[in-house]
Structures are given as C-alpha cells and as structure tokens.
Image (cartoon, rainbow, N blue to C red; front, side, top):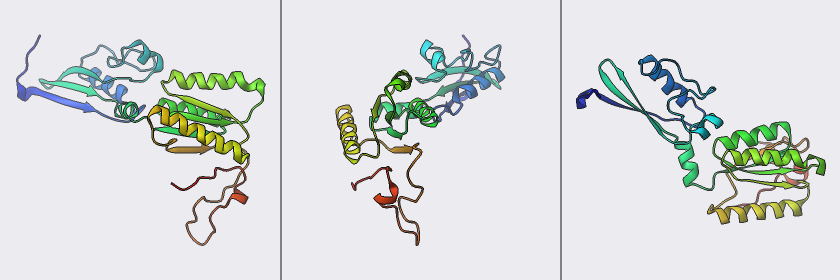
Length: 219
C-alpha cells in the first residue's frame, strides 16, 4: 500500500441535507480522480459509498462513509456525512402534520417528508373501501424508517380535532418528544385562504371564515 507524508494528505468532508446529491458528488470525484473505472450511479446501486443493501434499495445514504482517491500526488480522504438523519435520530420531536394526507398531493408529501427524516401525522376522511390504500401509505412511511399515525376523521368536527391533538401529544410524550411536530400542511378542498396572522390592515383569520382549518391554541 502506498504511503503518504502528512503534508500530502487532504481530508474532505461532504456535508448536506438528505437527497442533496452528496453520494453523486463523491462518485464523480472518485471517477474523475481515476479511483473507480466507471461513474457510480445511485439509480443502479453502483456507488462506492452506498454499499449496504438497504441503502441501495432506498437509493439514499443511511450512515457516514469514507472514500479514498489520489489527486496531484495528494491522498484525498473524502468523508460523506448525513447530518440531517443524525439530528433526526437524536431529536424525536421532528414531525409533520398532513391534513388531507390521502389526497394525491398529501400522499406524495407524506412520503417525501418521511424520507427527509420526519415522523408523519396524517388526517384524512375516507370511506372504508379506501383503507387498503391508506394502509399502503402508512407502510411506505414506516419503510422509510419513520413513525406514522393516521386519523380517519372529519376535520370540521372540533371535538374530533381536540381528540386527535391529544393523541398526537400522547404519542410524542411516549417517544420522548416535547411537542407534536414542526410543520403543518393543508390539502383539503375547503377552508379559507385568509392569512392566519394579519400583516397589515387586513383583519387576521378567525374561526368563522376559517371553517375546518386548524385552530391553534397559544403556547
């Protein structure tokens, strides 16, 4: 094995959010430096840094990886990090509430947020015949390594909303978290487009025009 003096060793850290292209960048660097005979691709599971079966199946990095290459007689040690996923594992309070989670947009967002490291609370209002599809959404979220808690309920019912929020809080308390999440997305066909907080002369949104929009209590 070739040895290098300390002044000829370069440590390079590749850091970024999930799905930001870290693996593809490392593959390109290795190929350009001649460390690999061909350009590794995430889509066909041929990258050097994503070699675990689960990483190849999900097309995403799960843990850090180290790759070596030589450039201009310098040894490059490239470390690829997953800061967002690490933060997610250490912080169980990262989550999102999707209202209208069974809609086309709601389902897509559920899966995207789960893959980016968020647990998902889903609120939908469907017939029993749609339950199989809903179960599929939940299974896909869990396959991404995140929790999924769904409620089949009428979001216009204030009592049911309160009950759902209480169950969400109980879930987070059991998981070690202090709140129900950090993001709320709304995909229902009814409601109001008035701003929740007035930014000028316009009056802020009240419960009457809000209809079935969420009513958030103070801290």
